[in-house]
Image (tube, rainbow, N blue to C red; front, side, top):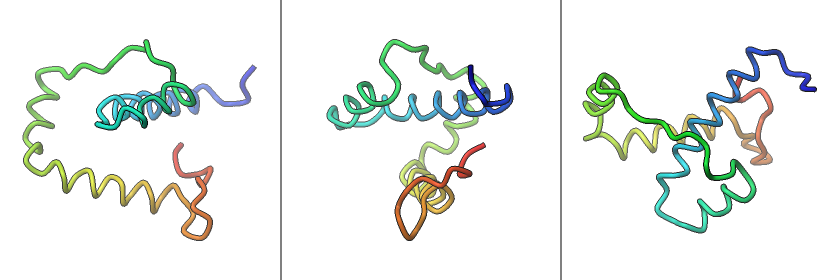
Length: 93
């Protein structure tokens, strides 16, 4: 039995789903293999963009590299200790 509240389980499941989707888009097969073995096993449901989401996020596709850099910077600053490099448990809900 989990000690997590239902809203925490939902929040974490949403984050894991998003991370899983990102990992499936990596170019390096070694990294995705590590994720599948040590992270979330393959075979789970994949996200599919609706037409509305495609239009919304597609409008930002030209800025993809800058968006990835911003994403990584924010996650690194928010979720990892600058001193130890370890995950801060309060980084995500």
